[in-house]
Length: 157
Image 1 (spheres, rainbow, N blue to C red):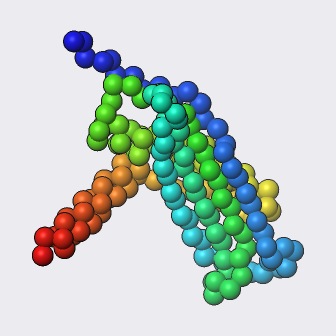
Image 2 (cartoon, rainbow, N blue to C red):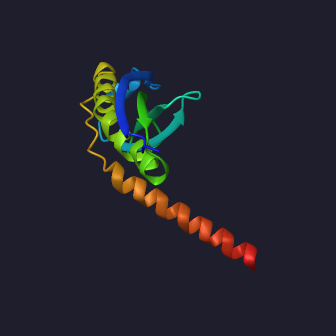
């Protein structure tokens, strides 16, 4: 029996959702611009039907508030997604492709949309710093392994 050939192919990258809110406008434009910026990141993958196609989604939420965190200057949320063909790749290797490599491919698109949204909101440029998705993936795996070990330890006692 011949071994299945490995295939990894990007089919499409698309903007799934984008929103920008400036809840305090126009008064926030009169405030001194010393924001506390919070960036939240989330990614996930799901198989599309019974195919070898997977949708990977990267969500970035950026919130800029005043120094006392009482007023929100803006809130920008972007969901960037891609469809990827993954054949002949299983287990940990596939999980790493979908959990680290694909988000790396999506991130430049997210960065551009966030920057555009913030600029169109009339705020100073917002450039998201590079993110090491491989390190985040490994950290998440270690946390899952630790939680599983603790859960197994609790059931044994």
